[in-house]
Image (tube, rainbow, N blue to C red; front, side, top):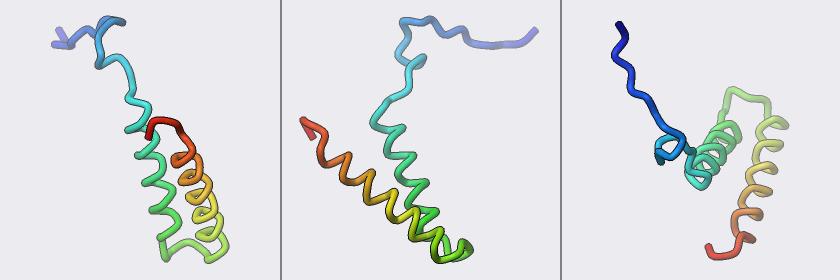
Length: 63
């Protein structure tokens, strides 16, 4: 029999931390923008996305 832990809906581990998830996504986009194996215009596209993400991050209230 499997030894698995059950997570209830009230458990904090059942939820994703929105800020940490956003930072992880931004890190992946930045890594793609810095990847020398990608064509230059693809890297420029990811740099533009990163700029948009940074603008969105700085516009959030309370940060």
